[in-house]
Length: 92
Image 1 (tube, helix red, strand yellow):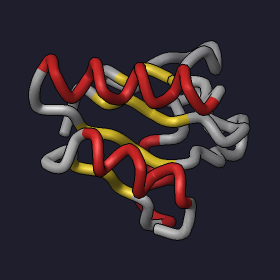
Image 2: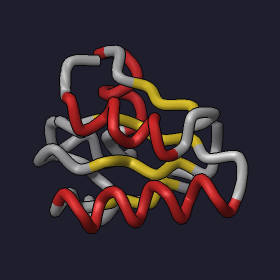
Image 3: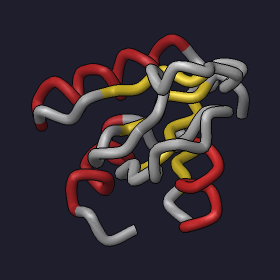
């Protein structure tokens, strides 16, 4: 994890699971279309409402877009994180 903004996120939510490995970014950053190349900043896997709140507050402070990720079965590209967004995954 090289982005200092992510370290700040973990300070505000110390138990938040955060993935930054290339394989995870590839997996969680795309949908079934496979049309767009994923390039998310990170993947957040919140376990509590407080963690979700911390992520959204952090994203707002830093101007980072949040892409919600549920079943990741979309076919329109609406859930693809291709421009440095933070993926907020409900399936961790």
